[in-house]
Image (cartoon, rainbow, N blue to C red):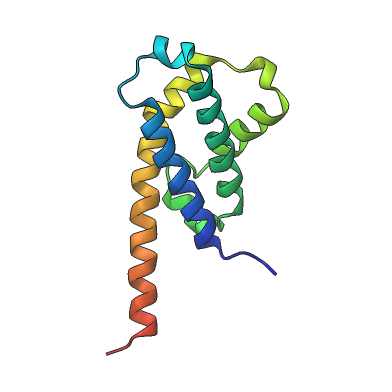
Length: 123
């Protein structure tokens, strides 16, 4: 049984929201010094990368931050080359790229749900 792609989009949104909460009010130095927060951000970046891989190409293309292979490559880097991670890049992704992708993902979810309502409930 395959999982509906909207569930993966929901996972992406949920992980993006968590990352936003984790980095909110922190500076790079506090982010780096709080091991649990750093690890939580890494985990949620992995979820975003994996969820992005499961989105149909059309959906991925609407997310400029996820349209390429960036999130999936970052997921692979975290999972397989964790020893080569650059904390400054993780911070930049968490504070710059994730918020943009999250806004686009929310918009895609809203549009898709509205489109589905129109299909399910014709007037």
